[in-house]
Length: 203
Figure (cartoon, rainbow, N blue to C red):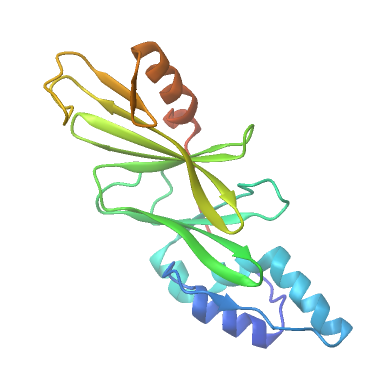
């Protein structure tokens, strides 16, 4: 990928943003010339290119995806150790955004029995799905003001796996409250179906 930023912005963003560490990269505080203003605008539009050009990031996360989570015209950057949607116990992934002049990590997943993200374009949501033996969970999120905010949750417990009681039948919860199997399955179909899960490509 071609270089597109001034060296000061490139170095600052690359060093601080690499590796999904959660560190923030500061953009210039002010632009005193037209050239500097143009550089700041370019950083906001194409910030992810700088992250992807960083060699340490490429080595740690060789796969990526771009998704405009909140439909504001600016993509968020997903990085992964695998091209598959399923992030297993020996894999990891993260999602980053550029907000108010800073590159920041929004969320990191991996190291569990199985996790993935599903993007819902129709309502601009991001589902974080996780599972373990006999149970699974969904956290439905929206990107607002540079943060992923939880707006809803769903939980599934197979027979004899519900922690609150010995359940002979499957238990579904939405926002912590028991619901019918029909309602639980409907929620999971809409927000937890892995057919819509994010996959990644090599860069």
